[in-house]
Image (tube, rainbow, N blue to C red; front, side, top):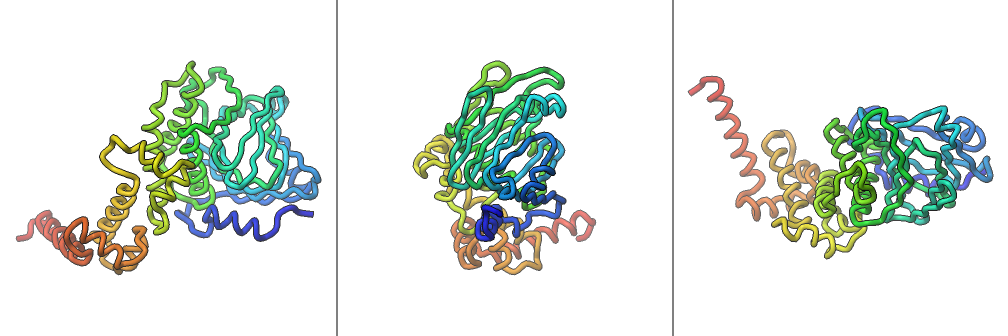
Length: 342
């Protein structure tokens, strides 16, 4: 017996865009089904489902240099980190996750129940503390494991953190970014460097700073929301359907509210998206003579070569073809000068 049908699974795969790889990095895919799936689950957690033979879990998981990322789809279950498991398998990681599907779940610790719901909540749990995570509906969780050292806790120093469920504007923005980041890394095999990992941890630290005063510096929420917005633009500008309205939806705020975060910056989300596409088009035109205009447009997030040409003329006063000739001529002249030619 299973509780998911192929339609749900295929919809999840489309949502995380697993068939649109961003790189060739290795990742780990795991399928756990029924009683055997529960018995063979990762040893650091105790997972229970009722009925056990109806349990299903599809998981993409990829460890990085500093962080670990995951994206999963699974049937209702309870995932418990018992005191015994904490003692047997100590952990220095904080779990940060969010859910996309309607519904939600709860995190339970010492009788305290913190409920979270689609799509606005960011869940943060210290893995060195006993807790239980409960999903009563089919759940698609995406998230990261962040080492406490990147959150400002010196290695080996004891530190406690009660579970947190946050729906502040900064937390909603962070949830959107964490989900996109985890899906791109774990399921789509995207490239990522250590500096980016540290920056992601800094974003989590900023959210934690709104709850704690012991270790964390106060966060400038508006600054971090703008940074998250720029990161989401970087991740999604190649999609022609991505626009300011889409970005607002990802941040779970109204378009008007999102624009307030940029009121004093001299730019807007729409301008940032447009400029990022133009910058990519210029880079490709200057450096890839074998790409046709339609290919450049598609790789830069424009719906068509015609749309790209129109935006290009409006911004630079020349066509993409004219820009390509000019850029390549300049490159050729620079090479000739570097080689000592006349």
